[in-house]
Length: 158
Image (tube, rainbow, N blue to C red; front, side, top):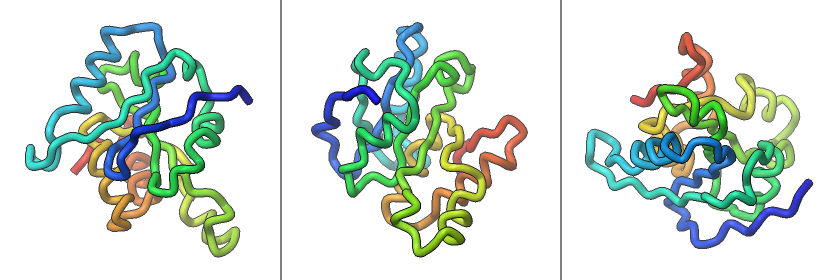
């Protein structure tokens, strides 16, 4: 695995979005604009920490997870990858930072990752996923299940 720059300056309440595709700057600007929209019926200011550094181009999910592993306040990381840039919905890849070692046993881990360790979410869903996981109100597996039930496999927000 390649050495990636350290993620610095992220407040525990900030969503972490890592840009991994650099083919379309206009699409990226659209993703950023959508993520910066107020959320929760416009009641909450968007707080996003963007990693927009070509050193992260084409990184894998495992490389991102390794790079952010030291952040104890991070339950989920979002990747703006090629699919994000190409899709009309700009759905980002949400990836849980949960590891098997953090679970009681294999059965617990299997239950928490029943629908996998990642799913897609529209930009409007990023904030409620991050907020609810951060406070333990909902689990990653619940969001992954909602995405799984969507015809396109995307969590679309409340």
